[in-house]
Each structure stands twice: as structure tokens, then as C-alpha cells.
Image (cartoon, rainbow, N blue to C red):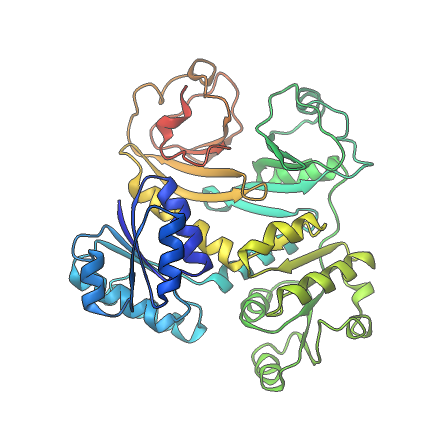
Amino acid sequence: MKIIIVGGGSVGAAICSQLVSDGHDITVIDLDEKVITALSNSNDVTGYAGSGTDVAVLRKAGADTADLLIAVSSSDELNLLSCAAAKKLGTQDTIARVRNPVYAELVRLMKEEMGLSMVINPELSVAAECRRMLRFPGAAKIETFCRGRVELVEAVVAPDSPLVGKSLYALRSSLKMKFLVVSVLRGEQVFIPAGDFVIEAGDIIGVTAGEEDITSFFKDTGAYKRPVKNLLIAGGGRVCYYLVQMLKNSRIHATVIEPDKALCHELAAAFPYCTVVQDDGTKQEVLPEQGLEKADAFLALSASDEKNAIVSMYAASLGVYKVVTMIRELSYVNFYKGMGLTSVISPKVITATDILRYVRSKSSTRGAEIESLHRVMNGKVEAMEFIVREEIPGITGVPLKKLRPRQGVLIACIRHGETIVIPSGDDAIARGDSVIIITADEHFKTLKDIKK
């Protein structure tokens, strides 16, 4: 595909690198000549210094014949105008990153008029991920497929876990439920495990199952913790705003600590069912005063990555069971995970992944379309949901034991109508199914790629 990226910051650079490796023709537009030079030197891309709203620059970048324009600059207004202009010039599809909640209703009403194929709100996506983590506090990360009916849960194996020392064969025979351990991260090494794989303490495992079975799995293995009732949040910005809104009808009571007086008044007026405290939640002495040690979960959502990491480690040291840390800078995400912060979320990682899913879906071959894509295991593994639109010779109707997926690829789940199937060798993929594929191969594009 011929793709134009407007904005060469950390998100644009990450998307650029991934799409180049996937074989797409990439052109980057950015106001800063140095950014263009750096991206051109590190990737095989064409770059133009200028504004994504400048028609002359868009024409130079090939907007009249482009398949897709992705606008991820720091300005919502520039992103929206870039998409509208590119669409008028002839670009087939456009994606805009829009962060300001003020524009949410406008975009919803005028999406078609603006020429937008997809709108990404990173803070809203982060809030949704926080909500999933609060629902299942024993998990380090939760992704959903098949419209919420199938879950992929990451969890750290504790030293006293009954999973330690057991092979996956033994687990499947001893636990009376349908589940599959689809990936394991051990240190920096990732495994797509076979049945003889033995779990060790400290492993991060990815487990997939239906809604009820995933809960039963963690209850039976001792990793299930009681639901969150008391939540403490440091930072009352956009992510907090969206999250507290999501908690309206839940049984979770949230206390928000925010230093900005005007923002505190706004939160208190909008959400009378939560407690809002004007103070700096990234100060160590403030957290105990607001009941940190009694909290079931703590979320560090301030604008400072460093402060979020420090107070998260402090909360964990006091025994708070669920600690979620927001890290905005992409280069810091794995660094802080390596320091023991297991539940790290990043608006930029989510944005890049959502865009990659869209591009993969648009460029996938006929017969199967990518419905969703998630990166798990510190980004080392991709989990993709395909919808099988047509019969695919050599794939559909073939028992999995004869299909023999290539190494590093696992068929984790099949949704057949309303039935969720954790597959065995006798199961087969059929037209109309949703299929979840796990792979450590980042260049996996189509369902046909599962074969040797």
C-alpha cells in the first residue's frame, strides 16, 4: 500500500518502522526537517518538511494516488484538516489521532464529511484498558476478541503457584475447563509453547478461553483476587476523566488526587459519585493520607512518566495488589516493565497497534479479514482475530492435525456461530468463523500464512 504519515514523532516513527518492515511504500510529512532526515536515514522512506494541511506538500507526497493517510501529529486540528484535504485530493482512506474530548461529538457527527475512515482517541483506549484490568486484577494485561466473548489474559506466575513445574499437558488433563496457554515470556525470550512445555516461577503466561472459563482457570490456580472496590488514582487528566465515567454504574469507589484546582472542580461536578482531592498524588507523603495502604488498586495517570513509575513502585512496596502505571514515552515502556512494573499501559503503544491492525486488515488477501490485532508479551507476540469470509483452499474444512501450522504459529480459538471452540486436532476452520491466531512472526499478514 502507498501510505502517507503526517507527524514524525514517536508514534509516527513507530508506525513508520513497522509499516516499512511489512513492505508498504511510506512517505512522511513533518514540520521539522531534522525529523524527516532522521526517519529517512533509519527507514527506507520518502520525507517532506512542511504541514500536512498544505495542499502543495500533500500533492508532493502523492495524496492524489495514496491508499491511506495517517495523521498522528501533536495537533488534533492539523490531523483532522490533513485527513479532509487528503481525501479531497484522492486519498482512499484516512486515519486521524484525535485526543481532545471536545472534538468527540463533532467527529461522530461529521466523520463522513471530514473524510475519516478511522478516528483514534488514545486516552479513551487507555481508560478502557484500565477498566478491563480493574475487572480482573490478577491479570497484568487483558485483551478481548470475538466482541468480548473470548479473552487473552497475561499473568505472572508466582513462586508459590500450583502451575510451577507442571507441563501444559498435565494442566490440560487436571483442570476441567477449556483453555489454552498460548504464549510464555521468560526473561527476554518468548515461547509459543507445545504441550511438553514446563512452566517456571516468574514466567508471564498468556491464557485464552471464554469469559467464564478464564475466571475459573485463575481461581483454580490460585491467581484470582477479589474484585476491586476501593480505587486510588493519581492524576485527573483525560484518561482519568474517561475512566471515572466508565465506573459510573460499577461498585468501585474512586478517589482522584489532582493538583490543578480548576480540573478538580470539573471532575467533582461531572462525577459526584467519586471523591476528588486537590493535591499532588505523585508526592509520596500524600498517598498514605488518602488511604493508599487500604486501596485495592492504584493507578498512576499523571503527565510525568518518571513520577508515575516512582509512585507505582512505592504503592507496590506497600502491598497494593493491583498497580497500573501509564507511561507515555514509547522508549520507556519496556524499561519500566523491566523494573518490576507488570501492568504498564501506553497511549502511544495502543495508537500504533490500532493503526497497524487497520492497515493489516486493508491489505489482507480476499477470504479472511483481520478483525482485531493485539500485541502481547511486551510486544513480542501478535494475537490476531480473522473473520473467514470465503472458503480458503487448504485452510477451511481441513482438520487442524492435518493443517499443521508452521512453527511459531498457534490457532488459539475458533468461534463457530455462537460456540467458542478451544481447538483440538479434529477441529477445522469453516467459512463464517472467527479465528484467533497467535504468532511470534511480526510479518504475519493473512490467514494463509499459518501453513508451512
